[in-house]
Image (tube, rainbow, N blue to C red):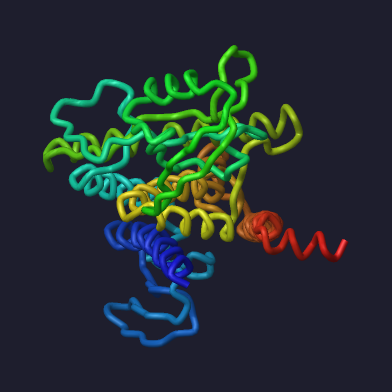
Length: 366
């Protein structure tokens, strides 16, 4: 239940901030806003101020903005559709911009209190490190680690009662043990476990091991001034990595005719949220920042019904010298929206089917 509440709060914040961007830019540019709602109908309470209805609604999944003349029926000076193309583009882009700003703010706060970071490279000047640990970042299939249920994110504490404080230390202990049984002590979500396991020969090498990739991690913090710089750098570095990941997915789709990356829908993200919650608050805010950047990128993809799709029609209008028929554009956006809904349903079904309890029921039936 806690996972669902936190997931809805994060999702609600990301969507609300996105819509707030549309609202602020529209008001600054003199475009009428008929309603700015927190949550989605049915309505709980509303208040009208200067032609705008401010509403609080029952479904707490962010918010929405209804712009004056967005449907093209009104032609007065405050109508969205009569504005110059650059004004409409700014309104469309402002939601994406606000999601990026939100990520920057979260990263700044995170680096001020301490965010989990890789300690393997040279740290920026002024960095303060605490809670240094050896963390599992990859588990090979059919390995010794997978046989005892070690997961990505687990913290390696001891091997045969010898503390692990460096990656080299862990590798040396595994080498000394050879293909024999050792006792592995590790931490997960604050709980400590100890299990015996027989080390296996690592493919392509002459040594035995758990079959994991390790990283030295810790909480890295900065003074507020340095946290601002590091927060901005982290946000745009993460944004670039997400763009590259999307480009790779699209490339694989055309090259291999399938999505080779693991894509998650609402259920999958909710499950990830539950896993991150167990790791702690700093991991959760880092996760929220990355989700905000993902939302920004997805929303500005040139896909009908999304902000990027609407921006694409503005570019076409600019090149043609006249707008595309609103009836045709509406049909294209409605079709795109239907396709997006279908994709969400398919991804959600896959996410649900991946749950262990659903797989067990399926196996029993078939």
